[in-house]
Length: 254
Ligand code: MG
Image (cartoon, rainbow, N blue to C red; front, side):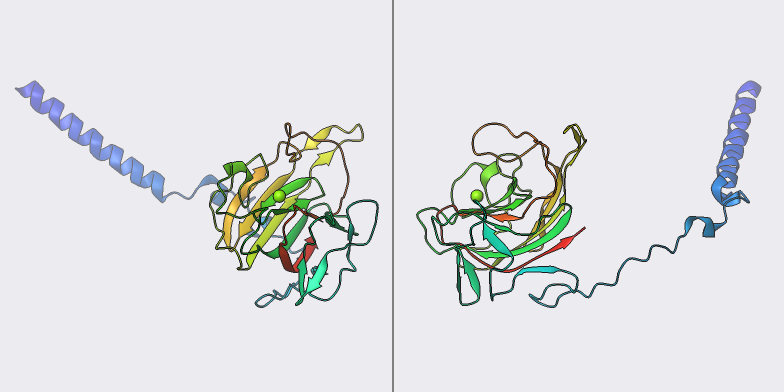
């Protein structure tokens, strides 16, 4: 009996000491804050100062954007084949695909960038409102009628045949849709080896549908994705036989 009382008392004392020890540990500041070498100012920096950018209001682009289409002309664009002029039409300040005239691309070349594209699919089309935004002419973010029963890695907002979107944020045909795309270009060595793959984030109508997705290569209709070394390249819009309309297209170098 005496032994039991002794053991019980010992347990009580040790648990009290243990709680006190924990409290003391919690009250002590972490080592980094105690150390005299860690002046908080040593982890704060003031240069370089990020540039001030005025956000666009409504459908207006931000102050430092390169305006690729504002409803007036196609001066920033050309046909994707052999430098011919872009032959899509401007109608009611909208850029409308003329089926059969081919893809169009920017005259300027881009690497890392932020892209804003607004697009509207026709209410009915035998080609299901198919088009696409190609980063660096090779990597397609799919534009297509979301009511079409298609493979999910080919649906609206997919990285074509690589990655289905995280959500279907499309509203409906005949309504304007907004793509915001953040593009990290792939990097190649002087020997054309891939040093770092492309990474993309896509926001459709304010909803993230691709979140820092790392591409495994280009986005072909047939065959597997692969990388071929390239430098900066144009932004390309696809003619896939449907009268898809575009407006308010702008881009920022990153
Ligand atoms: Mg397409």
